[in-house]
Amino acid sequence: MRLFAAVLPPPAQLTELAREVDLLGRLPGADRLRWTSRPGWHFTLAFMGEVDEALLPDLTARLGRAAGRTSPFPLRLHGGGHFGRAVLWTGAAGGLDEMRLLAERADAAARRAGVPMDEHRRYRAHLTVARSRAADLDLRPFVTALESFEGSRWEVAELALVRSNLPGGGAPGARPRYETVATWPLGGAARPAG
Image (cartoon, rainbow, N blue to C red; front, side, top):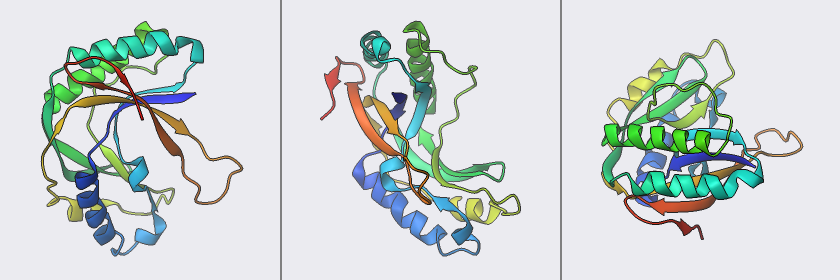
């Protein structure tokens, strides 16, 4: 199964972002972007890729300990940026040091559970709102429009393990489906999702 550890913004903050994304969708060139949808909005902390199901018990135990060692922290959606000409994102403000620490702990938990992880990189909090395959599309007007975006604050209180179900059949416009496998309260014990 294809897994990642994440912070999932609450519904109210997702609604704020949806309003902002609706405005971005009116800008010239917006029709050339593939917009992500609300079910796909999350902050990936550690992307694990395909994980052997046999590793799941140890992985979940280790992620639970990582969450338990991390205190809740404040966060809000804030501003935006881009990675090259391919990814448009909104960022975060608030407890970024705590979020970076949680990302490092989730990455270490996966490695110790035997999940082969990509090369470790410094964590940068971002939530992808659109992707482009057009090499000539300039994302700077979208980033400029996002500069003033300030979401309302919330307390990040849990770590989530999310399964990404890739679309089958290569249908145009098909998107991955996300399923929360488990959540752990920060500073607390593990509990199953649902």
